[in-house]
Amino acid sequence: MRAIFLVLFIVLFINSPCFSQEEVGQASRVIIDTSQAKPIIGTVESVIIGDSVEGTPSAIVITDDYGRKLYFGVKSYTVLTDENGKVIKLDKIESGDEVSIIYVKNKRGFLEAVSITTSTSVQE
Image (cartoon, rainbow, N blue to C red; front, side, top):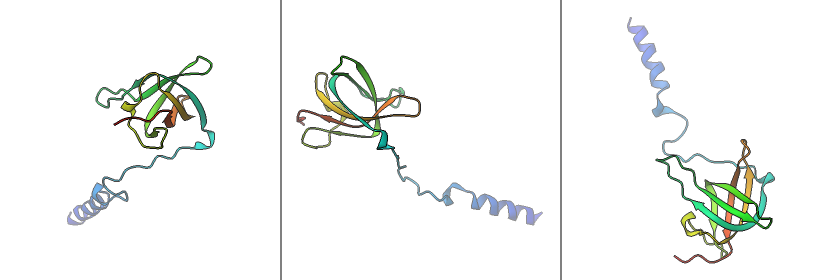
């Protein structure tokens, strides 16, 4: 009987989350295949600031030179910069701003922004 408990204890000890191969608190890396990335320039129609509690994803809607409205998901890996290359937050981009977006299509066919650059300097 003691042998069974000893074996069970060893199995549970080895498989416990405390001894996993991944470090606790380590950020997961996102790998994006940018070989399929495409650029587009347009005017911002709206910016949607995500809310994790409500389950609302961040997004930006632009109108391109042909008058098409395009919806781009803004993910945690999306790089947002102003014309000087300064990193900005999504809430600094406003309707009417000219933006350049590099995007990819995800596996479900949705457009995801890899980078967004505004054509104007953003004031703090």
